[in-house]
Length: 72
Image (tube, rainbow, N blue to C red):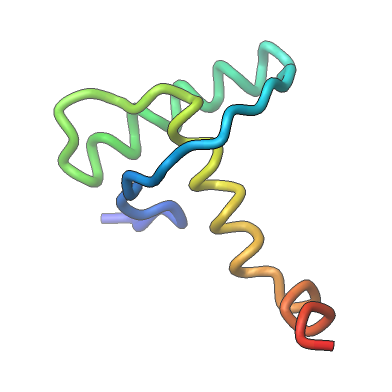
Protein backbone atom coordinates (compact mmCIF):
# COMPACT_ATOMS: atom_id res chain seq x y z
CA UNK A 1 0.00 0.00 0.00
CA UNK A 2 1.26 3.48 -0.86
CA UNK A 3 1.46 5.97 1.99
CA UNK A 4 0.21 9.50 1.50
CA UNK A 5 2.18 12.40 2.91
CA UNK A 6 -0.93 13.45 4.79
CA UNK A 7 -1.70 11.28 7.79
CA UNK A 8 -4.62 11.43 10.22
CA UNK A 9 -6.07 14.90 10.72
CA UNK A 10 -6.40 16.09 14.31
CA UNK A 11 -9.18 18.29 15.68
CA UNK A 12 -8.02 21.75 16.69
CA UNK A 13 -9.68 25.10 17.30
CA UNK A 14 -10.08 26.61 13.83
CA UNK A 15 -9.37 30.14 12.64
CA UNK A 16 -11.58 31.19 9.75
CA UNK A 17 -9.94 32.31 6.49
CA UNK A 18 -11.46 33.00 3.10
CA UNK A 19 -9.62 32.02 -0.05
CA UNK A 20 -10.36 31.31 -3.68
CA UNK A 21 -9.07 28.19 -5.40
CA UNK A 22 -9.14 27.21 -9.05
CA UNK A 23 -11.84 24.67 -9.90
CA UNK A 24 -9.28 22.11 -11.03
CA UNK A 25 -7.53 22.25 -7.67
CA UNK A 26 -10.81 21.79 -5.80
CA UNK A 27 -11.57 18.72 -7.91
CA UNK A 28 -8.11 17.31 -7.17
CA UNK A 29 -8.62 17.98 -3.47
CA UNK A 30 -11.90 16.06 -3.60
CA UNK A 31 -10.15 13.13 -5.29
CA UNK A 32 -7.34 13.29 -2.74
CA UNK A 33 -9.93 13.25 0.06
CA UNK A 34 -11.40 10.02 -1.31
CA UNK A 35 -7.98 8.32 -1.38
CA UNK A 36 -7.09 9.74 2.05
CA UNK A 37 -10.34 8.41 3.55
CA UNK A 38 -9.74 4.98 2.06
CA UNK A 39 -6.15 4.74 3.31
CA UNK A 40 -6.85 6.13 6.79
CA UNK A 41 -10.05 4.15 7.37
CA UNK A 42 -12.47 7.07 7.41
CA UNK A 43 -16.09 6.28 6.60
CA UNK A 44 -16.39 9.34 4.34
CA UNK A 45 -13.94 11.73 2.69
CA UNK A 46 -13.16 14.93 4.56
CA UNK A 47 -14.20 18.20 2.91
CA UNK A 48 -11.46 20.38 1.39
CA UNK A 49 -11.66 22.86 4.29
CA UNK A 50 -10.46 20.08 6.62
CA UNK A 51 -7.75 18.74 4.30
CA UNK A 52 -6.17 22.02 3.19
CA UNK A 53 -4.93 23.12 6.65
CA UNK A 54 -3.35 19.71 7.25
CA UNK A 55 -1.65 19.84 3.85
CA UNK A 56 -0.28 23.32 4.48
CA UNK A 57 0.95 22.27 7.91
CA UNK A 58 2.67 19.21 6.46
CA UNK A 59 4.26 21.32 3.74
CA UNK A 60 5.62 23.84 6.27
CA UNK A 61 6.84 21.09 8.61
CA UNK A 62 8.83 19.47 5.79
CA UNK A 63 10.40 22.69 4.46
CA UNK A 64 14.04 22.50 5.58
CA UNK A 65 14.95 26.03 4.52
CA UNK A 66 12.00 27.45 6.45
CA UNK A 67 13.14 25.60 9.58
CA UNK A 68 16.66 26.85 9.09
CA UNK A 69 15.57 30.48 8.65
CA UNK A 70 13.13 30.25 11.55
CA UNK A 71 15.90 29.19 13.96
CA UNK A 72 17.89 32.34 13.14
